[in-house]
Length: 239
Image 1 (cartoon, rainbow, N blue to C red):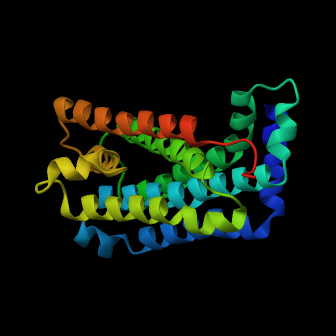
Image 2 (image 1 turned 120 degrees about the vertical axis):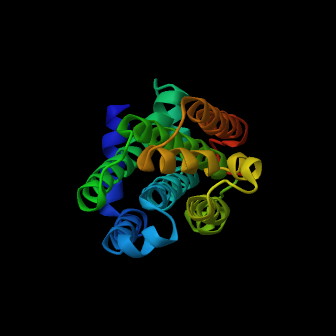
């Protein structure tokens, strides 16, 4: 797994387009939100900014990079060749997605740390970490599922749009308007419960009962994403 992951990490840093669009741009957008945090706080709250940062990096960095990577490796039959080795399917997939996941998590950790230093830290850091990890696992599962219907890296520019735009819009909707209205709908949408959990964990005032409910909704989306990935992912190009 480590050999696969190291090779994939080298490919990421060699591909300038992937490096810029998937990692530099999300970091730049997040930095803008932090720089203008006083303006965005008036729209929502500090927790809202934290949620947007997490889902911007997760959607643009982790999700799109993973879909593009897996589509590319399938197209050039690299996935098929890897399956002829002694490595198991889970080892292969883990090795391919770990570099993007680690980079995204490091980005989130660094940017949220800077944000906390500039604007004030979260009320419950551990709960923020749990929400971030659950969101990233959900996006990884959705990436594997999306890669199953993506024929090429070029096709990924189209197939990734619904989830990419969707989770960022949901994060903004929930972060700005809260869940006072359409509560169940917002929590049922992908990223909705995780956003509410992040906002509450950062701002404070979340009850144990509400935390359990939001974690249950978030973990339900993790299960759905993983199940979609199991059913939709393909190892060889369509003929």
